[in-house]
Image (cartoon, rainbow, N blue to C red; front, top):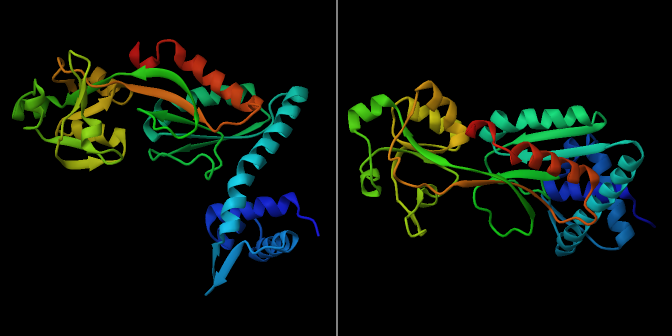
Length: 302
């Protein structure tokens, strides 16, 4: 008996979602079809891929190893087919992009919309979430990441660098005064960012180039930059924000800059993707498009 590509895709869907019902929903199939494909694949391989107990399934060690090898192989096969189609008739297939919420809605959507207009036969999915998404498990082709990147094995291309600013409302400054030094900061209420430890957010570069973190305490915290901005506008504390989040509120006078002598570490904005050779044409096209869009002065810095 031979395995089929449909069985491989279904197997990876079950691995990614963790359940037969989740795989069925993802692929718009019935649960019975998913179960049969898994059973047929196990019969073709002569090995059990899942342990079944009490109506639940869990992958075997063989399944984990197989999925680890199949994910990049399947991605490369899809990319090869789509690249061949692009060479004959323009970009085709699908492109999934992950990006942080605030940056995505404010500055990325229009850039991707322009790319979509140029490639009408390419299906594009944008997923905005401030959490760091697993590109392979999430089936993303590419992601925009903001901040210092951990060594993840992904390919990285830096798009630009965004300064950060310490801001507060005029009302807050009238009530509490404006901090000027690192020591002053800790006496103030701050707006916290839930996705990163406080000392990793409140980082500053000294005159000698050394970076130091300030252990700020926050009564109010959020997991999104725009929410932090709005809380600062409401006078709930000072916030350290990317300029791309704060620039409009600064322009309108809703926020003012404080502690301007301090030097917050800037945020690199990068595009990342899994290492695939050869690089698919759709991936090369979107990376080049993003690099061109942000290579010159980004709109919030002009």
